[in-house]
Image 1 (tube, one colour):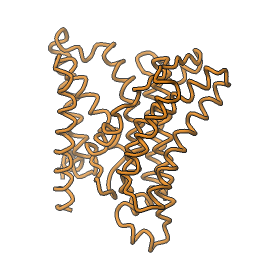
Image 2 (cartoon, one colour):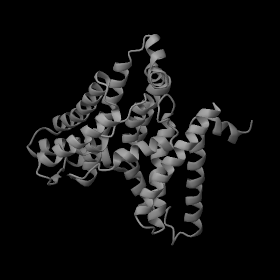
Image 3 (tube, rainbow, N blue to C red):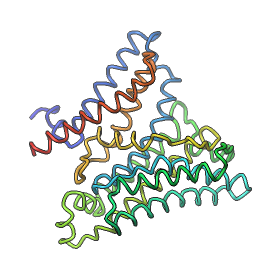
Image 4 (cartoon, rainbow, N blue to C red):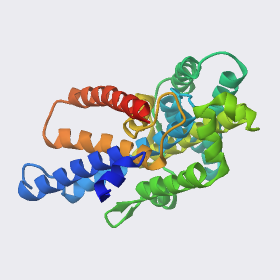
Length: 320
């Protein structure tokens, strides 16, 4: 078996191959036609390193939850809500650290409540989190009468969350760090085994002594916490918490997971696949922008790739 075949047999192998081909194509075009395709320009790379982490961090939380067979459509609203809460408290002269903690706690609480509703009722997570998405979005508009809130937490805090280390951006390092921690718990810790077991066969998981409801509630809470953290990074980067922040990110996060070879029914997926899926979405968006393609092409791509990825996942599932 050659190296390429071994890579493709890995759960994230196909997305890794696609990502490598697309990235290599971008690099070649950037070298051959640098004036018409400015992919390798430092400004373009900086933009990618700033934007990928927001979707990537969201997708990690959503992906862990999807492995259990559940969805969270509220993460886009939580993204904006946590940022708004932290910004408003800081504006009222609360200590920065306390404002941030409360903002994160708000995101985690919404995730916990979502998990409580799903595990204690017969309401599907898709419906429950769709409802919470709308509720939280309404709260965002009500809290500050739909007006943006300035957020200037100071140079030190901005440097830690969104500063630059040469060409590298701090938020991308946070993305890698959170990815490494999630990788450990998903692939090297027993909690990861519980996630796969719950998503793969709930009855079997229960029979082996796994607390299914607790496993899912932890995953929902993590999803909310990571959405809140991504929202605070976003607000810090633009120095403002805006009502529309996070709108649509929930669907892109699910798309990133599906592209990264997570099964919609749960039980399968890898952390590497999630991170590559999120990165590929922004990479293709960057290609479209550099090619001066209309903005709606991005939405068309995301929709089409979701359908294609689901079909490919079904083929893989039947083959296995």
